[in-house]
Image 1: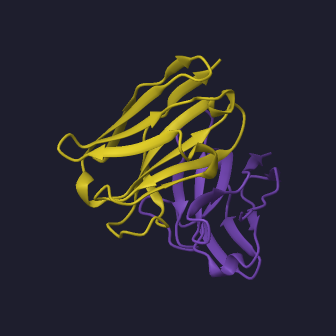
Image 2: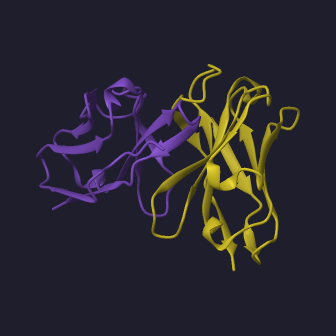
Length: 122
Length: 108
């Protein structure tokens, strides 16, 4: 059964840092692109970042460029999101999500989601 | 940046048909994915590439995309379909993903 297990959220002051993790199981992690999506309290979904299956291509939404870094360790089937210089508007639930196919394009659908982890910047 | 527009809410009676629309400039030239999210849960993919229904999603769910509007249609609506629905596209001009604002489906 394909599964993504997240950890690493918490409460941090503005300007602080947090690192989120997402452990994959039940599929070949090293063949799929991965994304992070977030949701502010009471608000809609917001795409954050994409990393290609090989870790070479990384794409970010404008508001997190230069502050967030996505990475992956295929030996541990783990996706990471390093968040620095956090701002109050980064507050929300962060989801990791798996690209549905083994294509290299970032435009694929997300067919498996993590349970979400809460980040509070206050 | 590319903008997707969804109505905040749609109401439908059980057994009837619900249409959730997503508007965007020339959205017909994009591949649209749809996600269902129930309170306190992670989103669930219910439609990919405009009209491909993932395994496990009921045949009552269908999708279309043309011109300036993409539509998720739910036939014979059930109480369990009550959720927020989000459209999503990849904007290759900015190389960023874009979600619509979401539509809350209420089953009366």
